[in-house]
Image (tube, rainbow, N blue to C red; front, side, top):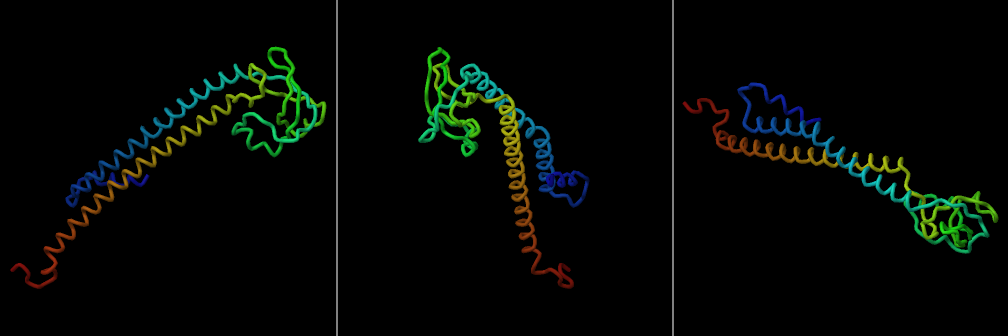
Length: 202
């Protein structure tokens, strides 16, 4: 990290200014935050997301039941019912069919659902997920999907926190540099009229 280059100002140097020392402290604080706060924030966010998603997985697996449905015929319109992010990208690979299945209470049900194209012929059997009332629902989230989402959440938070630390460091250093330039301008304005003249001050 470029902030670590400011640490050289810790060395004893007669030309060291107060702003150099402040910049070194800022660089050290940024390094510590990158090594401690950024991983901790990512881990905390990822763990929290995984715990929440794991509860959702358990709830969905308890409330959504698999059954076998049979295709009656191709549907005239698109399938009704909920669509998840996971299945939205698969719509072009699926077809809407009128199917018949058995609800958890044993009653027969018929409705329009989406199935893979290779299972869309009349009489074909395919797996269908329903709620406890027998209504078609999306498949429950898998544990692997929950872990992947949690990892992405943790990495995203770590990246955001790291970017925030670097942004604050850059703003602080920029302010210090502007202060140095302002002091240099004042010093130059005071010494400028006599600069380079022979015998100045004698």
